Image (cartoon, rainbow, N blue to C red):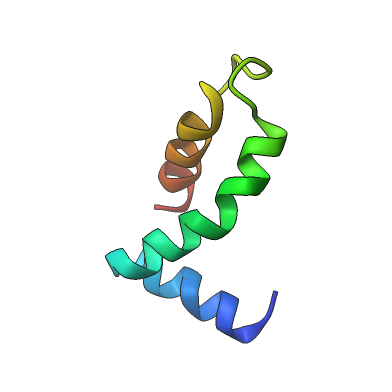
Length: 58
């Protein structure tokens, strides 16, 4: 990870909603690829994966 990415994550974890939105935009394609809507009962698709990621980081 680069310094700007680390800073983005820190801002998002600190409650910066613009940083959260940017982070989710960056992670969305990866989450969708790994956890597509029909492939993953574990997390409920991309939305569930993002929610789980948020809980685990929070």
